[in-house]
Image 1 (cartoon, rainbow, N blue to C red):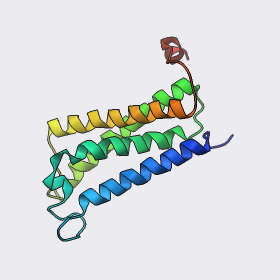
Image 2: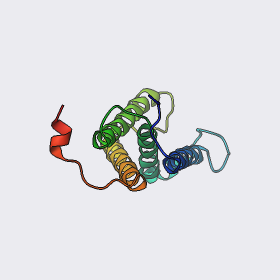
Image 3: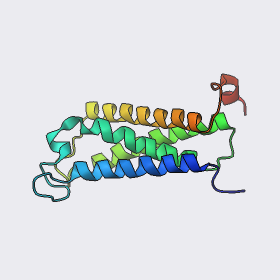
Image 4: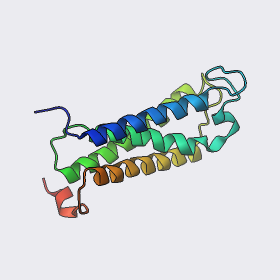
Length: 150
């Protein structure tokens, strides 16, 4: 049994979204004025809505990566699991922000920001799943019976 179950188009999409997410994160964390990484003012500091771009891209990249794997599930269960895994990735990112905040002063941690970030993580994961369904040419919507059947 192979570790991967994918096609070239989806691998290209995964690599593209992953590189774009890393590029956007690096650009956002680099100071535009001193060219120093993680110093203020950076885009996260000067434009608080920058998270609305980085969170969906990161969760889409994580979800796309999961969708490349050969999961021992039906196709429909596979993308539900990938969507959940993208959300777990987003939750892990939020935990990392709470842990790193005392050491890096510009990280915003508050319940409203966390909920907005998780909301954006869901959007990114959902868009990755919808794009995956389109790229792999799958028709139909998940049957509830297919999800609850053992």
